[in-house]
Image 1 (cartoon, helix red, strand yellow):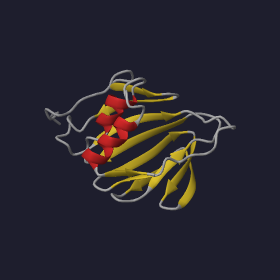
Image 2 (cartoon, one colour):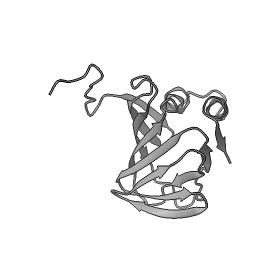
Image 3 (cartoon, helix red, strand yellow):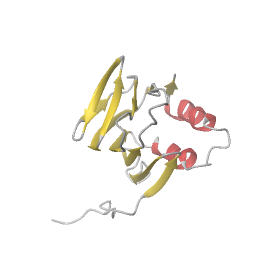
Image 4 (cartoon, helix red, strand yellow):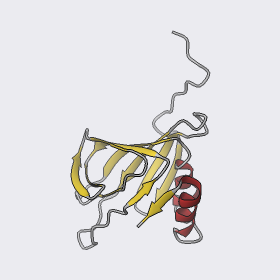
Length: 154
């Protein structure tokens, strides 16, 4: 078997890391790496304090399919208007245009693999989610997600 020129190994501490307050992640494969076909990132969602209200961050992407694989932990996942408890090994496919969001109320971190099809949306995490990266306090992320990726946030 011959490796193709696009084959790449991403070691444990490689990839493009980002932070978002208590959450963090790393882009393993960007849309730039795949000619825009897809992207894949690890995302660690920190537990929310019990005193903080549960917020799912409902949103949708009109032109992007997004997938989530729970590698460790638990997560409450909003899909359309239903909330489901996801556990280690559970997988969710969110087609374009479907409202979704999530909240970690488990008391421990939730480790996810998240993909975007087509790729490109992950660039916003690198640009804006790295702590202090959005001088507009989150408005830059939302504006670019809406303008560049036909996303809508509630």
